[in-house]
Image (tube, rainbow, N blue to C red; front, side):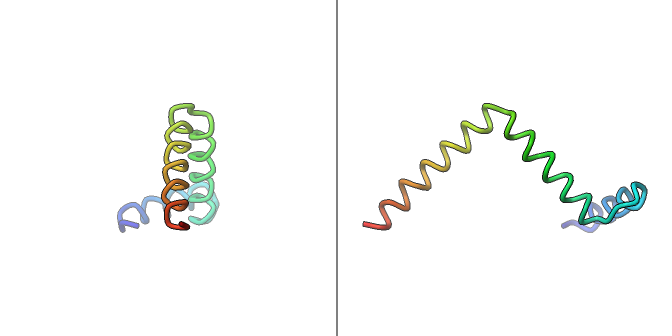
Amino acid sequence: MPEELAETAEVIARGRGISVNALVLEALENEIDRVKRDDESMDQLRSLAERDKEILDRLAQ
């Protein structure tokens, strides 16, 4: 993580009375929830997963 971002995260976490780890977990949970609600993002993930499956299937042959 870039030093400036780490310092900013630390200040924000302290200001909220939580750890940097808790702040990062919260941000990740929020991003995952956002992606789940976004049809375009989910379609893109499904497409990538299908492509990965096809590659794995070829490797298994």
